[in-house]
Length: 337
Ligand code: KG4
Ligand code: ZN
Image (cartoon, rainbow, N blue to C red; front, side, top):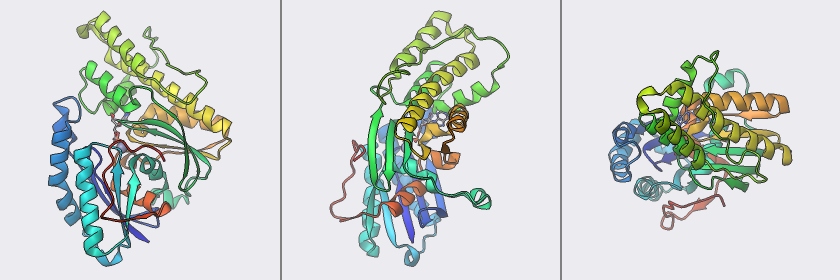
C-alpha cells in the first residue's frame, strides 16, 4: 500500500510516498531554517509563510501518481499552528478531490516510526523493522519524551521534560556560545574536534539523572552553562571544551533514563527519534549501553531523524485510522494519546 505523507509542523516542509510503511518511493524535504538562523530561532510567522511557498512546488516535484496512492496522511500536531494549518488543509483538499482516505498522524509518534523506514543500504544487510515492545525516546526541538510502545497504536507515555526540550537546550546553549541556529549540529561538530586527550576542568550538572521517574529537566543545565560563560568571559571561552561537556551531560541523562525504562519494562528494543537523534555522542553512548544490556537499538538515518514526510506515511501505514476530511483540525498542543 502506497501512502502520501505530508509534514509541515515547524520549519521543514516534507512530502513523501512510502510503500507498506517501510520503502521510500519519494521523499522530498525543503526548509526555511536558513531564514530563521539570523533570528537565533524559528519565527512562527516566517515558518508559516515558507510552508505556503514550499508545499505546492514540492508536491509538483514529487511527481505523485494519483492512481497509485491509496491514502493521504498528514502530521496534524503538535507544532506551530500557522505551519500545521498549511499541511493539514493541503492534505484535506487532496483527500476530498482524489477521493482517498485521510489519516491524521501525531508528529511525535511519527518521529519514532522513522525507525520503520528501511534505506537501500539497510536492505542490503537484511535489516528488519524494530521489535516490539520497545521504549521510544523522542528528542526534538520541542519535545523530550519517553514512551512505552507495546504494539502498533498501543503507547504509554512514561515521562517527559518538565521545562526545556533537549533540542531547545542545544539551541540555547549554542546561541550563548555564538554558534548560530540550529545549535545541535554546531555543538556536535565542535565536540568532535575537541582534543579528548587533554583534561577538562569544566563540569556541568546531570539534572534528575537518578530521579525515581522518567521525567527530565534541562533548564538548570542550560543556566549552568550560561553562568560559566559569563564567569569566564566570552572572549576567553574554549567553545569545544564547553560543547563537549554540555553534550556529555545531556546525553548521559537521556541514556541513563532510557536504559532504566528499557530494563524496568523488559522491552526488546530501544527506538530513538527526533532531530537530536542525529547527535553523534547520543548515538555513541546509547549504542554502548545497549550492547552491555544486549538490547536492540534502532536510530533512524540522519535524514529521517529530522522532520520529513516519510515518517508520517510510515506511521499512517501501521496506524491506519481514517478520519473525516471535513473534521480533521490542526492541533498545536497534541500530546501522546
Ligand atoms: O525534530 P526536529 O527536526 O524538529 C522538531 O520537531 O523540533 O528537531 C530539531 C532539533 C533542533 O533543536 C536541533 O538543534 C536538533 O534537533 N538537532 C541536533 C542535531 N541535529 C539536529 N541536536 C543535537 N545534535 C545534532 N546533531
Ligand atoms: Zn520534529
